Length: 602
Image: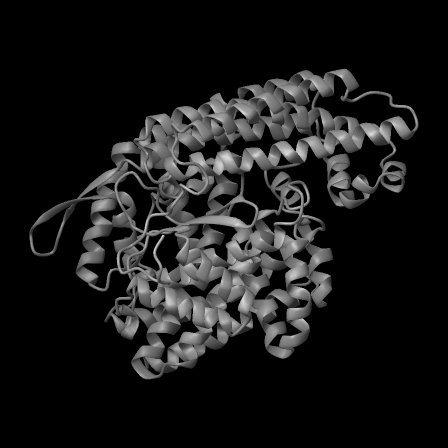
C-alpha cells in the first residue's frame, strides 16, 4: 500500500489483505469451512424437515427453529460473499487464470446447494403463519420484509423436486451461459488498422473504450470498424449462449406461473409494473429532447446525423487527459462537499488499493463494485483518462459508499435489488459532474455538459433500446432460436426506434447484444439503470432544496434498500414513483442541460 493518496500508474486492486494468494493455506481453510457449513446446514434442514408442508400453529419450537436457521444461513452468506468476491477478482481481470476458474466452479457447486435449501426455506415460509412468526420472533421481526417476499415467492414455486433440479442444473445451464460470454469476450483481441496505416492488436475492452471516448474521430471510426469486423468471429457461441439463457428463462417463467418475462424482473427489483410504465412513459416523452442534443452534437462534427462512434464522443475541452492522481484528488475533494464520511470512504478506496483501473488483456470490459467483507469493497473500471472515466470512478465509489451503509445489516437484510442499487452511485456521480460544471465556462463547459449528457443518453435512451431488444428476443424465443443475423437486426431496429433521425442508420452497432454481459445473466438487467439514474437525480434535487434534512435521512435510506419496496423507500422523501410526474421532474434536469448544450454548440 502506498503512503500517499494517489498513484500516477493505473492501479491494480490489492486482494492480499483478504487472502495471501489463491494457493494459500488461509484461502484453502476458508473455502473448506464454507463447504462444511453448507453441508451442516443441509443436515439441519433435513432434521427439522424444512420444506413445503402442512405446518401446525407457530409455537416456541418453531420460533427457535426459524431463528437458528436464518442466523446460520446469514452466516454462510457472509462467508460465501468474501470467497466469491475474492475468486471473482481474479476471474474478471485474468480470464486465463485456470486455478481461479476451477475454484470458482467448485464454489458454484456450493451455491447450488444453498439455492436448493433456499427454495425449501421459501416453501416452508409459504406454509406457515408468518404474521404469528413475526410477532413472536425478534429475528423474524427484523427480517419482516424478506419474509413477506419469501411468502410471495412461494406462490411461484414449482414442486420441490423441480426446483431442486433447476438449482442443480444451474452451473451447466443458466450460469454457464453467462460464464461463457465472459470467458469468450474477455479474450477477444482486435487488429486495429489505425488512420496512419499501422496496425495494433488490442483487447476488445480497450477497443470499446476507444469507440466511445477517443478524442480523434478518425481513431474512433477505425476502432468501430475493427470491432464490427471482429465480433462475427465469436458470434456463433455468443448467439448460442443468448438463445439458451432466454429459452431457459422462458420455460421457467411458464412453469412458475409468471405472465411474461418482465414480471419476474419487476418482482426481483421490488418494483411494480405501474412504476415501470410511469418511468418509461416519461422517458419516451423525453426522446425528442435527446435527439436535439444528438443533432446539436452532430453539427459540431459537421454532420447531419451522428454515427455510432460519435454518440459518446468528447467535444470541447472534455478531451483533456485526466491523470489518476488528479482523478483521485478531485473526487475526494468533491465528496467532502457532501460529507467527511463520503470523502473518507473515497480516500480509503484509493489508499488501500480497492480499485483496478488498468485496461489489459484478460480483463473484462465495463465497471462494477463488489462488496468483499464488512464495509470493504473492490471496484473494477477500465480507465482511459477521459472525464467519463472520472465520472465512472465516482459512480462505482458510490456503490462502495452504499456498501458501508449496508455493512451492519445481515445478508438477507442488505439484499438490494438492481433498481435501488444505483441510488448512491448516481448521487455520487452527480456530485462530481455538478462540481465540474460549476468550475467551468465556454469550451470547457460544453465538454463537461457533453460528458454528463452522454451518461444520461446512454442510460435513458440507449438502455430503452436494450429493453426493447430483450423484450423482442424473449417473445420471439418462445417460437424458436434466433440466428446471429436476426439478433443483429433486432438490435439495430431497437436502436433506430429510440434514436430516430438523430443517428446515421448505416452506422449503428448491431452487435451490442454481444458486447453487453447483462443479456446473459439476470433477465432485464437494463431498465433498473434508468430507474437508478432518475431516482438519483430526483434525490439530488431534494438535497439541493434542503441539504441538512437530506443528510439526516440519506444514510438510513441506503441502509434500508433491502428492507422495503421501491415505493415505500421513495415515500420517505415524498416521492411517488408510480406517477410519471416524478420521472418527468427528474428528466427536466436533463432537459435544462440539453438546452444549455444547444446554446453553447451554437
